[in-house]
Figure 1: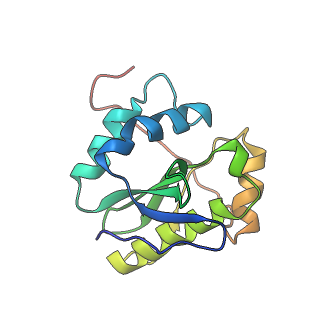
Figure 2: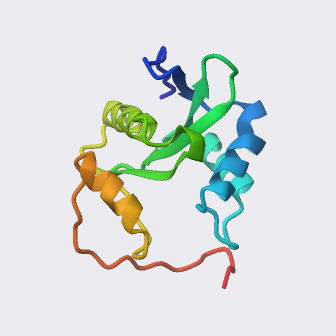
Length: 152
């Protein structure tokens, strides 16, 4: 389920992550505040790439090849999920975040996902407004979790 697009009027192409992108993507996630102490971004990248039902897409400058954004998408057989949606500060407010989301949505739809889900930290109001502006709605749910790897 790999996919890329030819690029847009904004000067960026969206393509699957490559081996040489890993460090730059992990740095982008850190700079954007997406990583928590218990999340190893390089491990998350490897895990997503090793799973046939997930992938990470990057927005790459068509001029310089630098990574300007990312999105991780996965389908577990019931719903599609997106994670690690990030756009470098200097490329925000240009529609790149929405392009990344639409790319992930199309990829998930092609995998059979009838719905796309995501989680936002309660205090992240700016991100909530972004998703609402591109058509996402808040669904009242309680998210529960349990670590299986011994992480406290």
